[in-house]
Length: 207
Length: 211
Image (cartoon, chains in turn cyan, orange):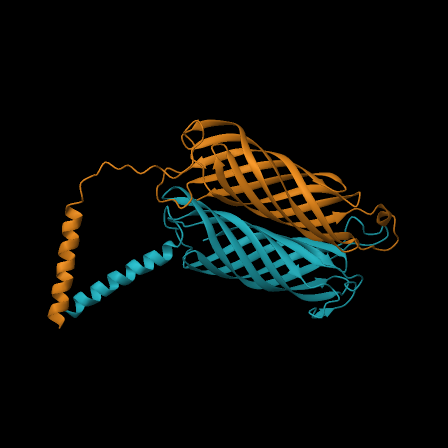
């Protein structure tokens, strides 16, 4: 008797859950993000420090937890950085270094195109919070927080090996160099003020 | 009490089974499809959502400024071959200062960022159905909007904007009824952008998903 009641209750709960997952989707249900995944990627970044642009390339690592159309991730990046620009003076040396980044964010599956049941082509939106730490070879050090908003797409296999090839691009907001939010700045990074909105782009694979 | 609950559930299940086993007879009513179809009646139209990355140039204060942009866009079919669209773009703006190239010490770059919001109409010029699930297209577009650019040296600029453009690309259609998006579109865009100080250009690559 109790089993029967339990089965009915479970059935009703499952139906309610299915409706909740459907959301405003009229055609088909989304194949949600995997419950756990790891991703590696090549990362390009660029921003301004003291009115001079910095940019570089590196490698990123991501650990993520999926819940339906939402994916929560933590990430870290180790990248090169070059601190000069096309307006750098003729006698000025290019300063290089390394950039370390760590952060956490959330990705939302906005669209999913599935030619067949084996895989799909997906659009996602994302936001993330993190910290950047610069180690310049001339001794300059800079630590600053960042807020990133972005979008991207991925080709994903829903069956083994359940691989996703992903591209994303983000607008990265960091405080200006004279902003109080700047944690530490030594060396050349106090040359000029100005908004410092950069970008990050990555191309990688997750499974 | 429990017996009554069980009897009620069993009765409901039986009724549900009867209803399933004996669907009501057809009454002759046929519901019209909701999707807008093109004139040649073989390409359904969808509400679209997607993004675009672009590179361009704008004559802000009569000086050449290079722009990079990341935008989100939505589209809605209003007529057989015409869609209305809206876009928001985040822009990075850079301006060359020739004097800085000869400077003895580093000079700050003239750079900024901005927002651009536009609405417009897009009309199909020609299309070719290559196969059942794939077609090529060439469209034209016209529209207007506003941009707000914040430059670290020139300050804030409000820029009314009008544009005329050309889009080309391809559409994939899914025959999988379970697919949340029935179509995927990839395109390039070439757009002439008029602002008070002159005419600029933009080239973009975008991807859009239908509902």
